[in-house]
Image 1 (cartoon, one colour):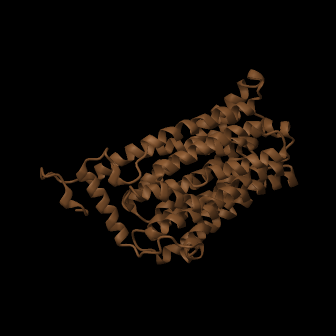
Image 2 (tube, one colour):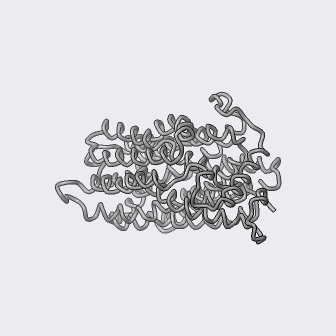
Image 3 (cartoon, helix red, strand yellow):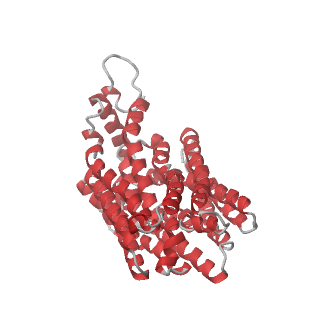
Length: 437
C-alpha cells in the first residue's frame, strides 16, 4: 500500500490512490489541454495565414521562415525566469497572465503591414507565450506521482495535435469565407478570431486552477493528505539540488543530454508545422481542403501519443519507448525524400507525426523523473528553452531550402537528422537505465 495509508477513511475500505488521481485529472487536464490548444493555434496559425498574408506583406520564403522561427528567440530567453515567477506568484495567477498576454499579442498580428512589423510582432508573441508549456509541466509535477505522469502528460500534450486537427479546418474556413468581411482581409480575421479563446481561458484560469494539493478544496481531506504524502515521499527519495540554482549549476550533464534529445525532435515538429499548409497547398488544393488534409498527420500523431503513453505507463521502459518514437519520426521524414505522390507523402508525414507526438509526453515523464525536484523549476524551463531554439532553426531551414531549390522536397530528409540524433542518444542511455526507466 502506498504512503499515506494512515489517512485512509475510517470505514476500513481499501484506499485507492488511483481514484484520487482520476479526480485530479478530471479537474486539471481538460482545462489545461484546452489552454494548450489555444496556445498552439495562436503560435502556428501563421502557417495558414501565409497562404494570403505573404503576398500582401511581400514576404519571401526566407523571411516567412525567419518570422516563424524568430518567435522562439524571445520565447527561449524568458522560459527560465517565467518558471521561477510561476513558483513565486503561483500557477493560478501566472498561467492566467500568460494566456491573456499571448491572446492580445496574437490578435495584434492582424495589424502587421510589412516585414518589420511582422517580425516584431512574432518576437512579442514569443515573449508573451514564454513559460506556458514548461510551467504546466512543472505544475503537473506538483499533482502527479511519477507512476501516473506519462498518461497525465499525454492528456495535456494531446492538445498539440488536437490544436491542428481542430484548427486546420477552421483556419481553412476562415480563409475561404471571411475575405473582405467588414473590409478586413481573411488572414487578419484569422488572427483576430483565433486570439479570443486564449483571452477567455486566461480569465477562467484565475478562478479554476489551484496552486498546490494542500489548497484543493475539491478533494476530501484524506485524499489531499494521501496526495501530499505520496508526492513528498517521491521528493524525499531524490537527491536535492540548490533550490535557486544559477544557470551554471542548472546546466548539468543530464540537463545538456535531455536538451539535445528534445532539440532533435522539436526541430522536426516546427520545421513542418509552419510549412505544412503551404506544402499541401502546392499540391493544388483550395484553402479549405488544405485545412482538412493538413489535419491528417495530427490525427495520427494524437492517437499515437495517447496509446503509446498508456503503454509506457503500464510497461515502463520510458527511455526505450522514447528512442523508438524518435526513430519512427526519423524514418517517416527520410522516406519523404523518395516520394513524389501527394498521397504517399502525406502517409510518410503521418508516420513521422506518430513518432514525434508519441515522444513528447514520454520525454517529459522521463525528464521529470531524472531531475532533482529542487532543480526541476529551472531545469525544465532550460531544457524547453534550448529545444525552443530548434523552433527557430527548423522553420528557417525549410524556408532557406525552399528559396534555394524552389521545392519543399529536400527539406524533410534533412530535418530527419534531428530525431535520428535523439534516437541514438536515447539508445545509448538504455545501457545504464534502471528497470523502471
